[in-house]
Length: 293
Image (cartoon, rainbow, N blue to C red; front, side, top):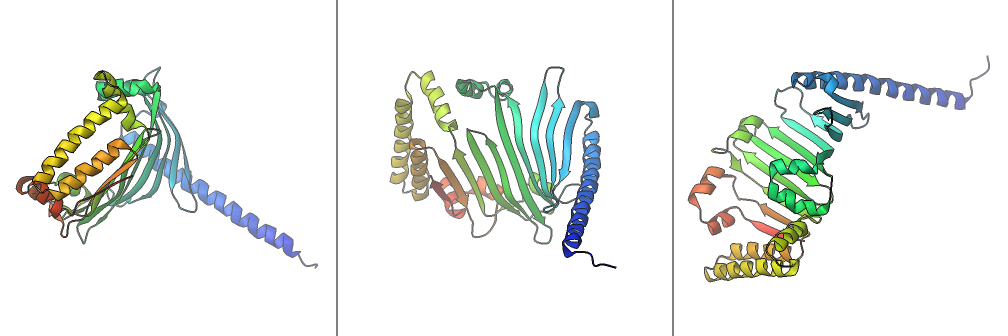
């Protein structure tokens, strides 16, 4: 019997691997779709009112739900480009760890009227029919340490601005406990970051027009008010308040990004913060810092 050429063997191995990958991915996607179908059914959403495609990434084993469209009425529908579940705890009713992204939520601009009419009027100058938003949530709960670490909670509106939060809640017994138990939860290292992409100047422009001023005049008025507050804080020797107000003034002049951070020496209860501290003592206790641009 003649030997099989090594090239043929290599092609056979590659073909077997590719075939196995395709089969595994198909099985995984089908299993994921079954679970998603069941979850949506449990929410009471009729199957004929929603459509989507499910796939599973072989390498990261993330589940991707794409081209989601839910009919609200005969003329209206709500669309999401994709939901990516990078990681999730399936052993508990409320997941003890979760990493999910919701990308490309298409929101009708008119819907803003229901949220805030003033905001709708301000953003109407952008002449957008819809606002595309993205959302991300990543957290994990350490049951032994009783710590919920919120690695990322972010929300952004494309071409406008993005807000993100990280924090730690100590002294909590569960994820639900952390979300509801503000009286006994203790705050650890945290930060809030805002990155602007036209939203600030859009709002400033709208309010300037309402007050009969141009943008520069309106900004100058804001900066004068901040300068007055800075001088008052300086007279009271409130160093951290001065630092905070000065940074905000810099952001108003050139709105790019602003970050508020805190890292208390020991986790501190929210209840204690709100009831027993002056503004300056609160900032000191939290080891507060602020960075601009």
